[in-house]
Image (cartoon, rainbow, N blue to C red; front, side, top):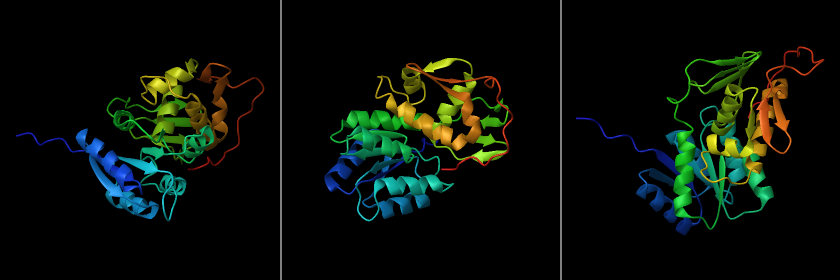
Length: 248
């Protein structure tokens, strides 16, 4: 007899009881196993002890805000690649960018559609599926990406990347030399069927560049279109000195 598939665990960190109940009910109806936390401190403890598959994180929390929770988890190797979906009433573009810069993988504003919540949750979880990725490492000069192991190295030093940052780098590197439109990146990396705010792409590219150090010079902005991973150095560039990539 075949064992039933394991339910994917979603940690929901939300201090409003009604919203917490709504989120958990819809996730459970979609086949997930939600666990609850009503403060930032509790959220961090449960993330580290239970190692959920994904976190839905409110921005405004008692004791410890959502941005600090996100920053703390990204600095911990055990949770550095945990998919984080921010759920908040702060809808201004500046707040969205701030959340993404702290390491969130996606951002959903209140009031929200329960169906969209489930769709975005599934989209983030799909990015973690490793069996669709090639087994062989991808190399470009001092940069090495191991798709199956979800690891990236610059001069043999590991670079700590979020799930989304890793998928973005993997796609750019596999398609090096080709221009990737922002809209295409949103569909392929984020899994959006409908094109959302393309500034999400720009924010993640900026964070990725910061972490790659001088190897980031190969990620070229194509004005008005998107991004391309260059296959050659620009004229006159010299071999870089050994550097320490920036960690999350």
